[in-house]
Amino acid sequence: MKLSEFAGYGDKMQQLMRSVQAGRIVHALLFTGPHGSGKRTMARLFAQAMLCRGLEKPCGACPACKRFLAGSHPDVRILRPEKKTLGVDEIRELIDYLALKPYEGGKHIAIIEQADRMTASAQNALLKTLENPSGDAAFFLISEAPGALLPTIRSRCQEVRFTDLSVEDCAGVLESKGLSPARATQLSGLAQGSVGRALELDGDEDYRSLRNRVLQSLEQLKDRASVAGAAALLAEEKGAEGTALEIMELWARDLMAVQAGSRPYEAEDAERLSRCRLDGRALLKGVVLLRMQLASNVAWSNALENMYFHLVDSGNNRRTVLSWQR
Ligand SMILES: [Zn+2]
Image (cartoon, rainbow, N blue to C red):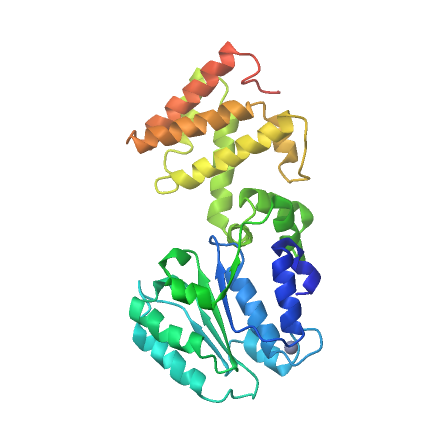
């Protein structure tokens, strides 16, 4: 990954990477932000760059990089809480390990994922090490809930906040990972700028087939008589209702964009969108309504039918709301 590919992650990330590449010491970094926003990927990239012996760090080709990528670099420890909490014993073990000389004579790297799961005593144990840096250890703390960290821990770390990227930047990152521009744009829209979520979706057959069923269901909607059949297509989506609604919401937004005359995507869906005459705004309102019904314990299939009736009825009342190009 080249420095230019960091563009989407903002200036701060590029600055940090430059100082790492120049060999300047970064002692403790705290990466915070939502799931899928790139915290883990970045921590690993920084760690690799710190260990790399190549010219353009991380080069990916030197023995240190290869060992790191294979997960077998002896100077790297990654703590990933398996349980609800990360206890003091695990932190003490980490500290003992860091007291040894780095095997390859460079740096020790410690990555603590879900750092907010550290118990108070674990955090206090870590704090001592953060307060008295030995000079050859670099810490990466990763957290989606940094409020659960002691203020003293946070103040010892350089905090970098991650946000979801813009859809365009997210698509750029996906393209740099080898996805086609059309696919990258589609997925980054679906994931609303979360690279991690987009990559999850990319490999997720269940999601793709659910999305297809949701769109088929919407496409069957013509009049009151078609409601039961269209809703039946989604009747079995128990446990996936939330995702189905997410898909409808994104589809509604895409429809609104297309219907407002802007065609932001060269998406695979362009044709399907232009064929669809469901009003985006009405669908979006319907999704909100459906969520409210679910929240007040209306059964999924009933709530869905209610929403579909509402959609076709408002379509009959107002010509523009629902009509299909045949
Ligand atoms: Zn390297």
